[in-house]
Image 1 (cartoon, each protein chain N blue to C red):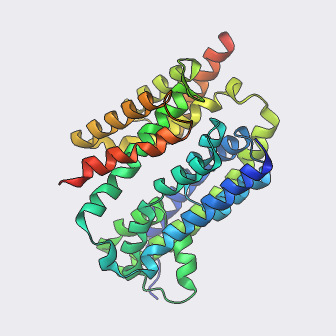
Image 2 (spheres, one colour):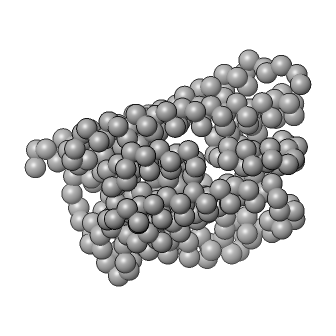
Length: 104
Length: 220
């Protein structure tokens, strides 16, 4: 990956995310008052985060691969079910995955 | 302006510290994905919206195109538009102050602010500004720490960083899964992304799941 890609991702993400945050302060409230728009918008984080979990835990480029990361996700699941705080969830996933990776 | 209530201050500080400390994970993920320490820090300063930052660097790390990374990150941040819509009448900001209010409009500042409603409109404003600026300060400090740390670690897989990122996404998703209907939608989206992985260029299956949100949200 070259620096043109990383810089364009940085600039593109920053500009668009900031523009999106500005919307509510500049646009009349009724423009976004549509109930359907609000329902879809509230589901967008749910579907994207689900897809990101799958992509990050099971994909290597365009292949589905089951490896050490899966052990990490299982640990994260267990921590979430046990109502562990956010940092514990992430650290237990990292430790489990690292352990499986090193034993392999 | 009335003084800041102790409860508002405590709420803001505890959220700012916990969430801010998590910037370590972003700093590490950014460097592991191939961004420089400077670029990783600029992400936190300028983009400043956690889940979207993670999405952008992780699509790049997975070999996705730059455009896919930008689109995935932006779509994930569309909820900030609705937050700003809720905060605008409560903050009563005008002129250039709107530019700063916008930058600080994120999950944490909006949620802490709205939770102060029983204490009155001034507490809502205090909650927003204290939480927003607190998260901003800690998130940026810890991003820098994480980026420097990851640079000295070497192979991210040996330290479990490649599993920490999906675990973080799962942790962000978890509180939204209280409702059974939402849980089913999340399951369908995950399955959809899995099936699309070998069929579409990397990065695009994530964006494609927006179709699931549109179909599910079309009718009430």
